[in-house]
Length: 107
Image (cartoon, rainbow, N blue to C red; front, side, top):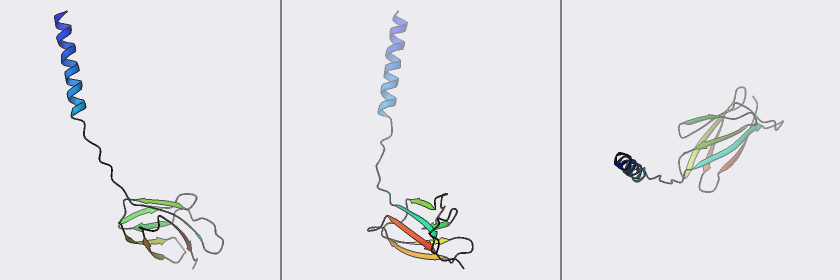
């Protein structure tokens, strides 16, 4: 009985130490840019368009939408290109704009 009591106390002590040692999670505000890419003439969405900002490259989904997280704060240059379309470069003020709509012109 004494052996079980000591083992129980030891277990509770270990659990308490693990709870105290848990790392604190810091909350950071991250800058996120969302948008959509479509054809300028037909307004059809363009799946698989390449969107690059601050060294990060993402592709639009089947609905032409994209999301880039943890990009630069303030002004950021965004490049959008797609096969057989004219590349578009946009300067985005992330302090005022969090969503962009891009219409690409076909060649």
